[in-house]
Image (cartoon, rainbow, N blue to C red):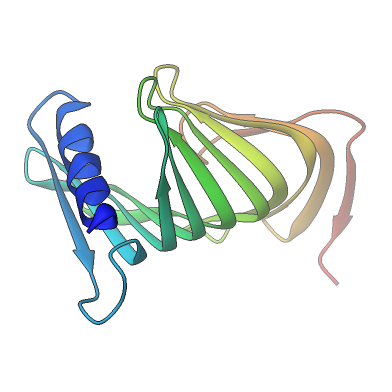
Length: 168
């Protein structure tokens, strides 16, 4: 019963935290506990923005933690960015997301980035990390210490001492 109340509060909080008529769907498999195997879909003016799948969601005062995380981000009705990770924290006040553990991002063009930690700054529209990262793009691997992408995963800047190698 407590999980059901927390889930209802999550739905209410998420439905009030964004502007421009954003609609959310949360689907939970009926035969499992309320916080297990969660699917969250966010819409903006009837256009899908993202889908989030999680093995478990934990609610705290100002954030939600998702474990076993998989996210698909849409642009103009098409899936453009995919993210998988061990866990992620969503700050319900700022809209920022911190993703941790075996993070993999890839886009529809096949560009792929691996890291252990990244942050999405909602208000700034920036994905960034200070952790070691490895990018595969146009048949080449690039390694560095941190990255930043202003428009999620379109143009990526790698920081630190950069090493590159061709695909084997």
